[in-house]
Length: 328
Image (cartoon, rainbow, N blue to C red; front, side):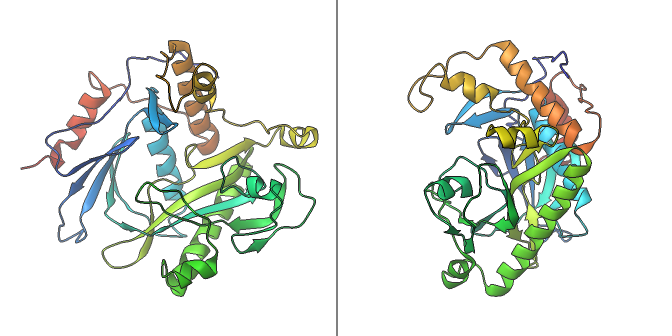
């Protein structure tokens, strides 16, 4: 569905000087709040901007992208709260979640249900190089691109906090390198597989295939493992459209999906994005990408997207909704 997108309703950043302890990421602008009796570990304000990042740089700001990601994660946190506790404290604004501060575990958890992916750590890339044993799993010969795996598998990697490259890990290596204890790994892996199974089941009911996804787990102030960041969003997960998957698989082509790569593909066709200046991205490309994100939200959640158009600008609205958290 193509909608008229108001390109002026965009949140390129959420720099709010009244909020303490800022941390500005590629997409989120965050602020740490001090500990309280209710939250002894403190809380963090996470504001999802509309920035879109690729090639280690910001390409553009896409209207309503931040709202889509925040509200999609909200939907899934609510749908999976019976499986694993999460970091959510409150949602004071459509672009904002206030979460418990967590110490993120040094292992990134990716669950994969299909032989897919393009990065060096993806199972498809390694499989096509002839590897059959990876991440502690042995895959059979004869699998084809984008084929369903015999069962969903965990493909953990080290988290490169220092800007280095993530490296594949096996469960044995995770414990031997003291990244997690055996008990922690057992708990995290159980949570991840249960979350993925719930996600795949609910996606199938919506005519979607949840192909793979990543999860961020951490420890809260009480030492409990909880899930943080986002879950099953279009940015953290790969979805295919079930209608059309089989014919694409048989033809050896890429299954239909929410094509968020429209901007990336447009940029790559016009420059070397790692070396050159990014050319001006036309309004129609911005609007098209906004529609893709909104379509994804509606398909994933089954809910109609309701853009919050209050406030003179999105930042004005967020400032008003976060004013109770401003420094005294």
